[in-house]
Amino acid sequence: MNKLSAVLIVRNEEENIKQCLESIKWADDIILIDQKSTDRTVELARAYTDKIFITEPKGICNPDRVFGIQKAKNDWILILEADERVAPELKNEIQSVITENNSAEAGYYLPVKSFFCGRWIKHCGWYPGYILRLFRKGKVSFPAGLHTFGQAEGKCGYLKNALLHYSYPTISHYFPKFNRYTTQWAREEYKKGIRISGKNFIFNFLIRPLYWFFRKYFLLQGYRDGFRGFFISFSSALTVFVSYAKLWELQNKESKVL
Image 1 (cartoon, one colour):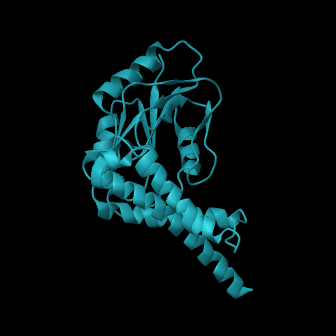
Image 2: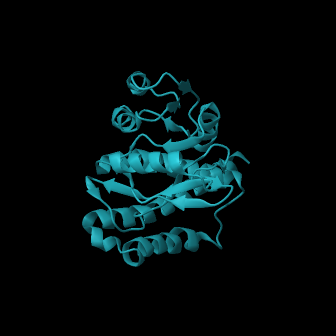
């Protein structure tokens, strides 16, 4: 019989970790990789698993996901984040496919229902937002990088029931991640040799942000989600602008050193 290992990468998630682990406590194995939390995350998690590994904070998750998968002992892997929940309907569907599946699927894409400030966001490109989270061990790789996703070796299927993602309960919760992600993105691009110049200044600081707002708000119908849709669309544009501003700041520091 095929069994399931759940793998989580966390840092300072005491507000979420109990609800997340409660929703996945039926898994045969839970692997938790903690990036040196300074709150009660690990203490709360010990009620659900003794397979807790402490690693250094990296700003990204994929290297620790690879480590967590290596520690998992079962045939199937489910990747979760602390602000996600597995509803009973999804639990039943997962158990069904890993128990009865005799086909060649390397894994399954899960639809994601994301909530922002207490409401399910149906537009802005957020739903169904399929993501590869359930897969056979050894059939999916995770390249390093901030926004790189699992890459499957073989055919994948799609589940019907959604993973619940409680991304930002309040607007105040949004900005710490916003700051962390834009900083990490700028560092990665800087290492790749990407630079701001007179030739690409207008494109990166004006055209790119405007494109992302237009795409989210109009093409992906973010306007149908009211103020939340406007905020998500505007913050997407702001993310692009601030990311390039931080890249400019890095190269400006370099020029002063030189």
